[in-house]
Picture (cartoon, rainbow, N blue to C red):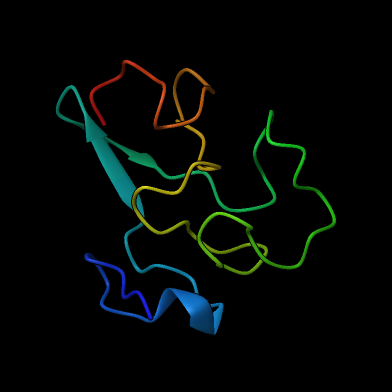
Length: 82
């Protein structure tokens, strides 16, 4: 089983990460919660298929679904230095 390297919670337990903010250019931006993404098409799914977080929770780092709060691309493909 895989644990989150930030919050230490078990990802397969369908729990949200505790990490709430990205720091970009010395400013804090709240991370986009699962189900609030503009581009993922995840609406209606109770748990993220990428990291297991429940709807309304924060993704675990490295999740392929997580959206950047600035550019709205996935965090894995954005260039915002999150």
